Length: 247
Image 1 (spheres, rainbow, N blue to C red):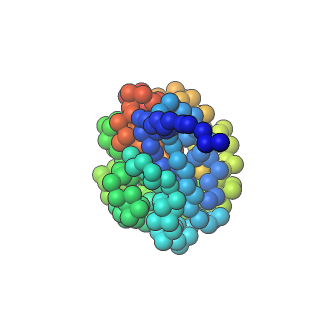
Image 2: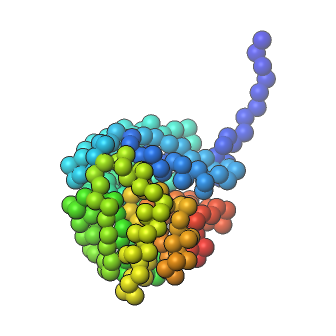
Image 3: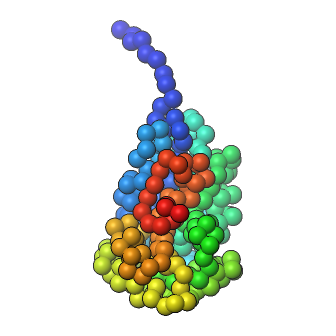
């Protein structure tokens, strides 16, 4: 028996978004699901092979896998925005190259990544003196410092957990990150604290840390979600943690 049916706009009646998540990321999806829950907004996920350890060489390996990962996102309806969920990867590969590689599969889709989103967030908030907290080894942290400084930002405070293993980064406690933010952000020279890495949990303590230091706090996942929402024209419909979403 053939059944009669009708069709409608599907889940993405307002916007269709894509996110490319690292194979070893255990945090981004859990934090994103607290934001991307508006009716009519669909968020589609794809995973990209990534090393269990973060170094310049392992980050560069993702460059070749980006088109395939992007191609696994659905395309029955054009995607409005795709995010590449790796702050250090976008730093080392280069944001423009990341966008170009993703757009080989989705040519008319806007693309962003955490470091691009953080720079946009700093412009939006009118700040340039950054207190930087990372989980990375020294070479990866230095590459990020260089990139931020190349975009007219000043690193006025810095601290790192100095971890190479993704599984360790995903298990750094909220208390540890809160204490790191307070330590790096206490200087009068710091206007904003940026906690880098999509695998570093932050959503539960962002607003508590902002209250403690009296300054905005942005994280990779928060900034990426905010920028994807902004690029998709959804800022009046969706919100998230921290001053960034309330400014």
